Length: 553
Image (cartoon, rainbow, N blue to C red):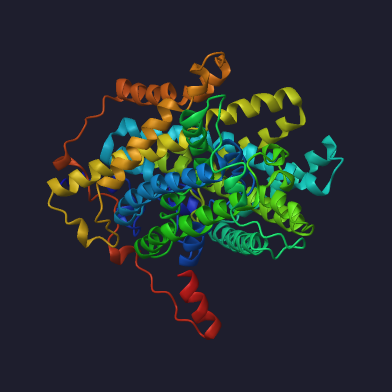
C-alpha cells in the first residue's frame, strides 16, 4: 500500500486557522494537513445528516423538470421523453454509485476533483477542477437571472428597473446564506428540498387525479395522447424510425440538465457530520429519488399534455411554460399555476445557492492540492473558505448583464458553452473509479469492507463512460445535417472537448506529473479514520423527533 510522505510541522507556512490562515498548528489533526502542499484543511463538519439526506433526495429537483421537461415531450413524444429520462437516470445512477464508493472511503475536501487528482492523474484533477469552476461561475448568474424572470409571472410589465431590483435582492440573499456558514446553507437547502418534494409530490397526485377524470371538466384522459398525436415525435425533419430516434437522442441532453448536480454530495461530504454513514445513506436513496420524482413526473406530464401543444415549447422562463401548468390549464384548474411558479422560484434560487456553495468549495479544494492559488485555501476560524467564496460571489454580478440585450446574448452564449460539462464530469468520475478499483485490488484493499460497496461494479462505471462519450461526440449532430451548419452551434457543442483536453495537456507539459501504477496509488494520506469523523446523533426526545429521525437520517 502506498504510504503518504512525511511532513515537518516546522516547515509549514502561514499562520494558524485562528488568524484566518489554513496551515498546520500544534494540536490540530494531522490528517487535515495536505501532504503535497502542507496546507491545513480548515473547513469544519457543521452540516447535519438530515441536510445531506435532503440534498441527495431533492437537491437537483428544479427548473429542468418543472419547466424544461415540456420540450422533451415536444421533441420526442411522451414515450420518447419517458425513455430519455429513464435512460439518463441509469447513467446518473451509475455515476453516483461509482462516486459514492470513493466518497465514503475518502470524505475529504475537493470531492471528485481530489479523487481524479489522486487516483487518475494530477493533470486530470487540474483539468476537471477548472472546468467545474468555470461552469460554476458562468451558471451562477444565469440561475439568478432565471429566478428573477420567474418572478415576472406576478409582474407582467417587468421593466428593467424591477428586474434589477429582483436580481439585487436575490444576489444579497444567496450570498448571505453562504457567508453565514455551511450550517445555514444546509438548513436553507433542507427547507428548499422540503418545498420541492411537496411540490413534485402534489403535482404527481394532482396530475393523476386529472388524468383519471377528477378535474373540473371530468374528462378522463388516460393514455389518449399516446395514441394521438402518438408516443413518439419525428424530429429534425427526419421521418420514420430515424426521426423518432433523433427525437429521443435530443431529449437526452434536456433530461441530463434535470439530473445535473447529483455529484454535489461529494462536495458536501467534506463538511457533514459522520460523513461515511451520511453519504452511504444518501447514495442508496438516489435510486428511489430517480424512480419517484423524475420518471413518474415525466410519465404524468406525458399523459396530460399532447406533444403537438405549442405552449410547451414556449421559453417564458416562468410557470407559463411549465408542462404541469399547461396540463392543469387544459383541465380547467386555475389556481395551481401560482403555486407552481412559487415552487419553481424556490428551485431556481436553490440552484444558485447550491452553485455558489459548490463552486467555492471546489476552488478551495483545488487550492489545498496546489491546483489553484494558495490564497484560496484560507478559512476563517469557523471553517468558512472566505477567499474562495468571495471569488465565486463576484461572478454573480454578471447577472446584471441581463439588463442589456447585447450583454444578455453574450451571457446566454457563455452559459450554453457549459451544457456538456456535466457529461465530462460524470465520465471522468467513472474513469477515476476504475483506477480506484484497480488500486484497491493491487494493494489488497477489500472494498466489501467499506461502508458503501456496489457489487455490480465495474459495469455501472463502463455504462456511464460509454454513454457520456456517445453524447459528447454526437450532441452536435444537427450541424452536420444538410443545411444545418452553424459555426456558433458547432462551437457550443464541442468547445468543452478542447478546453478540457487543453487544461489536461497544459498541466502535464508544465508539471510533468508521474502517472502512478495501481500499486502506487495513495489510499492513506489525508483520509480520516472512522474514529476521527464519527459522530453520534443525539437521541430524539419526543415522537416528532423520532419521526424526523426516520425520515431524514
